[in-house]
Amino acid sequence: MFIKTFQTGGDRNFGYLIVDEASRLGVVVDPSYDPASIVRYASENDVRVVRAFCTHDHHDHTNGNADFERATGVRPLLFGDTDDVSGDEIADGARFPLGRLEIRVIHTPGHTPDSICLLIGDALFTGDTLFVGKVGGTDLGDGARTEYASLHDRLMTLPDEVRVFPGHDVGGAPSSTIGRERETNPFLLRGDVEAFIDLKRNWAAYKEEHGIA
Ligand SMILES: [Fe+2]
Image (cartoon, rainbow, N blue to C red; front, side, top):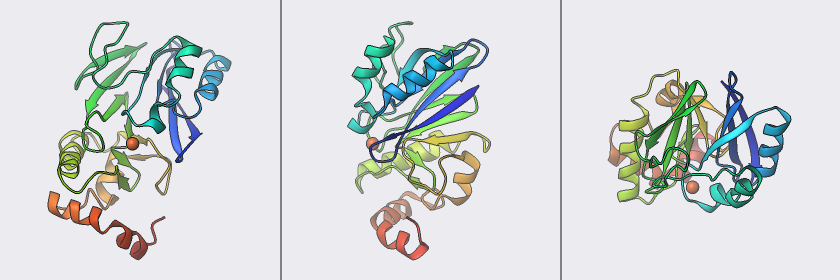
């Protein structure tokens, strides 16, 4: 498996191309602001893009979808959509083949109700659910509670070695691992949901105190 990360612009958005090297088939995650670069890279590297997903329905992740589909014939799918190839719904637990690899959909509501993470091999594409050292923005009520449950029940149950590729370059490094986030992400170190919400409420002060950009 080969992963190419694209800094697509916007709010330091990331797009990704994931390639099964045996078949040269690729899947794109969040084409966002720069579908042209992703499509060009794929064609220059002999990769046939056969699938695409968006991690959630926020404009900065979906605004390149029409251009991407025009260039590739592949429609980026969101939670609740139906896959044109298999007829399967993009639902929690759905699995799609990519050559010898498998793409697994993990529904992680919170930042938005339709947020998904995509597990491909040992790589997890987390959109705006989990960032390096941070988590996705929510309200301080049900959104935060739902996000807390998604983070702990769906993502922190994955093995430490799973690599984390977020939707924005807003942390101290472009990517991380589940283990590193489990050990160092201040939001994941909070012992319960009330402490998690409290950190969200006081995040500006926390960042300043700890020198976090
Ligand atoms: Fe978002």
